[in-house]
Amino acid sequence: MAEVKIYSSDYCPYCQRAKALLRERGVTDWEEICVDGKPAERAAMAQLVGRTSVPQIFIGGQHVGGCDDLHALDARGGLQPLLDA
Image (cartoon, rainbow, N blue to C red; front, side, top):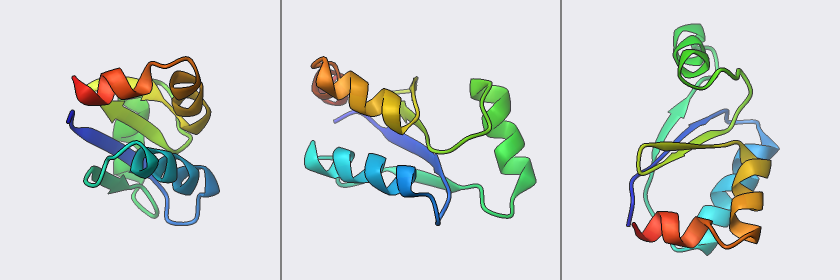
């Protein structure tokens, strides 16, 4: 299974929703970077993706976006192949 990396916040319902979808698709382990109270981490994330909102999700090194982007990718059948790559 491809490596998954998530920039997140502890109190973000979108982060929880994205992680729930990943669990449904069989992902049991990911690298999580919590940006709460860490302006340097949030700035590094923003530098990478051009966004400051969380979650920001990477699968196999590819940025797939936030929660809505992840769900849209899944709806069009693209999430599982990316995870399986």
